[in-house]
Image 1 (cartoon, helix red, strand yellow):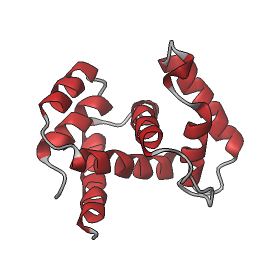
Image 2 (image 1 turned 60 degrees about the vertical axis):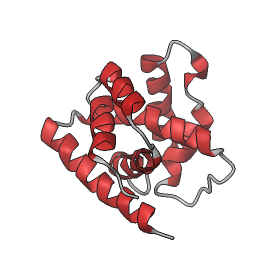
Image 3 (image 1 turned 30 degrees about the horizontal axis):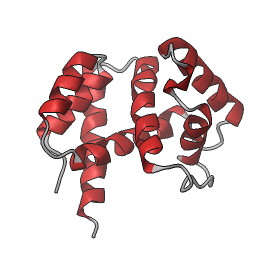
Length: 144
């Protein structure tokens, strides 16, 4: 199994803020196995750039607070502790194995758009990100 063009298109729509297009493409998608690898791969690459090793936890906490205030009317739309821990874990030793897979996936997906928006990635920047993330996701999917 590998990431499909349709799965990349669905994530591209999401990263560009076309949430209706994202939902439509996601609904039309058959298997989501590649997509569920593409999301964490994209999260890993973006988080590594946004919060490099040594980033003070206070900056991560502040970012999560801003995301919750800016993007969520429902305070339960994003678990702040899970978000902070997942962001910090990319370049740290904080194990996140106690966070359920559904919460991990949802949190990673939800955080992608704010991070991309903050970076103000161009269309080419998004394409480069997706190509790199697809490569990582495909490598993960090939592992036995």
